[in-house]
Amino acid sequence: MQGFCSLGSGSKGNCTVLRGANSIFLIDAGFSMRKTQDLLHRVGIDLRQVHGILVTHDHHDHIAGLEMIVKHYEIPLYANCETAKGLHQAMDVRPKFKIFETGVSFKLEEFLVHPFSIPHDAIEPVAFTFSFEDKKFGICTDIGFVTPIAVRALQNCTHLLLESNHDVLMVHASNRPQVYKKRVLSKQGHLSNEESRTLLESVYHEKLEMVALGHLSQECNSPETVLKAMEGINVPLQLLHQEGPSPFFSFATTIACL
Image 1 (cartoon, rainbow, N blue to C red):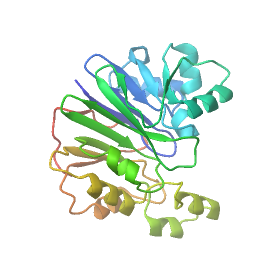
Image 2: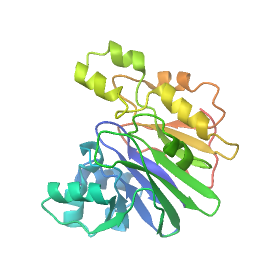
Image 3: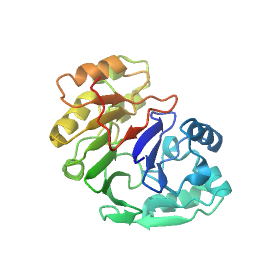
Image 4: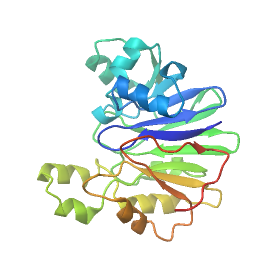
């Protein structure tokens, strides 16, 4: 059944499963190969079934498992040129790269994939939308601020996975080092709950079926704080967690509001 699930979302690792009619893809691989295998088994998937891994950017919490995975499995990596260069230099193995151009859509099995530029402190980071039939899935995390490019790309999505990383007051009140606070609050950092709401309101439409909110900071956010920030949003919301897989969200099924 076509849909997606999160194997984990947060600063300790990120990986999303996208299932098509006859294909399975991962978006990022931020856990060790062994943990990725275990998490996939928990949702009924073997790593040998994965047709490819799409890479958003080269931060450790999005690529931690890539080197060992491509060493033991012949799974191609889909990345833009600059991200591929960085991965090539960092790995002792030579992945089978499939290079895409940021901003240019490409076909991937039944999906039309659109990689779009986002502001983050990485080498040419991207987010993605996946369109097929009358469905459109957008995944957008690790974005420093809401850009016109992101709003335009995420229009008409029926399913969304958006970042809701932190509460600004909790960041300021935390014991985190000042360099962390400056980074996460910068325009190359992460979206606050309020900014995530702004992005969601900018792309909301009547056919938006559900939104998954991810990359929640474990110290500078909480599920209760996120849901309070999203009060009044008339769309089913699901919160993703760092530990353990989420439910499988089918593109054919509408989910009840939290």
